[in-house]
Each structure stands twice: as C-alpha cells, then as structure tokens.
Length: 132
Image (cartoon, rainbow, N blue to C red; front, side, top):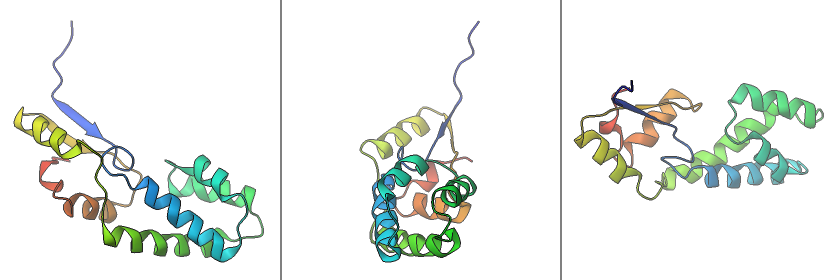
C-alpha cells in the first residue's frame, strides 16, 4: 500500500544552485594565498560536508595551517563570487514552479548557514516556492 507523495525536499548546493563551482574557485584562491598544498583533493573530500567535518579533516591534513585562518579567507572569496551571481542549475526554477503548481509542499535541506541559504534562494527568485 503506497502513499502519495505530498512534499519534496531539495538540497541547495549542486542541486538547485551551481555554487559548488564557486566554492572550488574560492577554495583554490584562498589556498594560493596561504600556500596550501593538494587543495584539489581537499576540495573533493570536503564537498558536501558541514563546516565541523571540514575542520576535523583540515586539522588532520594540515596541522601547520590553522583552519580558522583559512576559512575566513575562503569565505571572503566565495562571497565575492556569489555577490556577482547565484548560479541556478538548469531546469531548477521550472521544476519548482511545476511542483508548486501541482500542490506539493517544498522544503530545503542544506548544511549552509540559514541566512546564506535564504539569500541564495531570494536572489534568483526561488524563495517564494519554499514552504520550509
């Protein structure tokens, strides 16, 4: 006995927004400034992790480079990039519009900070589609 689907939960980065490419650029720019080696592997391993998990990974891989020095620099680069544009994945707005028109409840689940997530939904006019 199956129940009808009434709601859809989306992830943000990499699903609705193509911000992962901006994060990769920001990771690399900050790493260049601090001479952090092997940042490509770190980016791959940390993509999708919450900040606490990244900090633990960082401490193990780069014990001589404080994460609390690196993180604000990476965030500065990321915010500069996202201030230019919040890139939307192809078809994302159309899918949200369709789901809302069909009466589905729509929610967002993300490891991004709340204020950042709301901002990233508002700027490309996605926010009104979300119930939670």
